Length: 235
Ligand SMILES: C[S@@+](CC[C@H](N)C(=O)[O-])C[C@H]1O[C@@H](n2cnc3c(N)ncnc32)[C@H](O)[C@@H]1O
Ligand SMILES: Nc1nc2[nH]cc(C(=O)O)c2c(=O)[nH]1
Ligand code: SF4
Ligand SMILES: [Mg+2]
Image 1 (spheres, protein in one colour):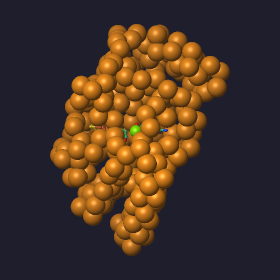
Image 2 (cartoon, protein in one colour):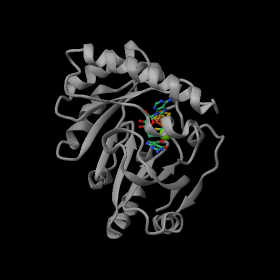
Image 3 (cartoon, protein in one colour):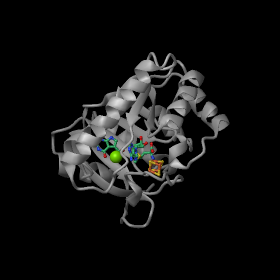
Image 4 (cartoon, protein in one colour):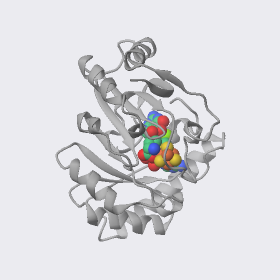
């Protein structure tokens, strides 16, 4: 079953969340059921980017062409990869190659193949995104992942987002919980200025977290790739 692919790149490092720093390839799929106001990958869904429909075997070949022997971990992001049923077959092929597989999703659409994923990052969206979380649906989603290696990663832009994250952490206390600095300048090409802005925002988020009695067992992270490469695509 074909999968619409936007870009394949790497090896690079995972810049976010539960396996931050992990050397990995990326497969970015097209299409999203959300339209977050601050989406740093809006080219996957706003019509400004071009995707190609690929069979799972063709994506495996492309990964080998680009990454050679220099990787053993593949991260599937998007857009929302959970829109695509064909990814199940792709994950099976990655495992046959001996590669681990990670997925990034906002946790709005279920596919049974999610249970085959080695590192699952769930990123429900805070109020600043303009999206509204269906908590009932999310409960069902989290329930099915009880025995999986899943984490929650919430992007924070303001104190309302931080309160939303607190609610989520209280609702799912057993799920490893990550707070991530929001990038509020996703178009600048001034990398030095962006890095200093993001470090400032990181300090602000650390302060909020250390002062909170809800956020005790949490990890507070920047987007490492944004600090290293700014808003550059394909890294
Ligand atoms: C582009 S999304 C694709 C996967 C999926 N649609 C999702 O949102 O989880 C990948 C990750 O980037 C995060 N992200 C998107 N825009 C961001 C921004 N401006 N600042 C910080 N993180 C951002 C998302 O919250 C998500 O965790
Ligand atoms: N290096 C790097 N790490 C990432 N972590 C999540 C990404 C994404 O866009 O999903 C991403 C990305 O695009 N690049
Ligand atoms: S859910 Fe992810 S890809 Fe979709 S609009 Fe939001 S940040 Fe972008
Ligand atoms: Mg990104």
